[in-house]
Length: 147
Image (cartoon, rainbow, N blue to C red):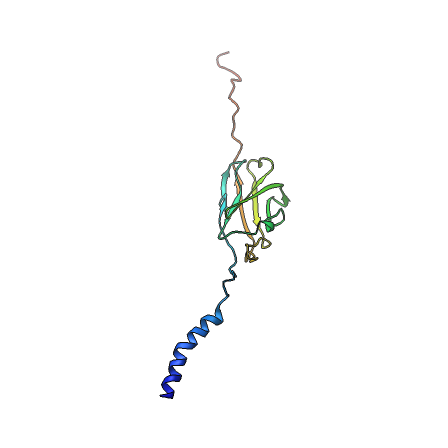
């Protein structure tokens, strides 16, 4: 009988202890992720006045979304951007239109954290290229034959 009680104790109590032992007591320990970007990585023919942004897997600490943690660069040159956070998305639009036919790199660094203080596991980096300037000059006749 004693052995049966001990076995019952082991079968019932150990799983409970395992669950309790692994509990985080409701504390968020999951790192946020970037689930989508605008424009998409490697996009081409992007409009020069496009919205640039990212959507996160969970709400972020807006105080960590700054001009140093959210950047847009043309080569090595960082561009001034207007940051706005709404829902789970951040937009960071340049203060002037982008240049035509130019590659840009957007980055959100690990300095960006969720509301529980969990940082992105790695920098989120994506690039895109703007479209070419359209030729809007009307053709002209420069000569005719016969004169």
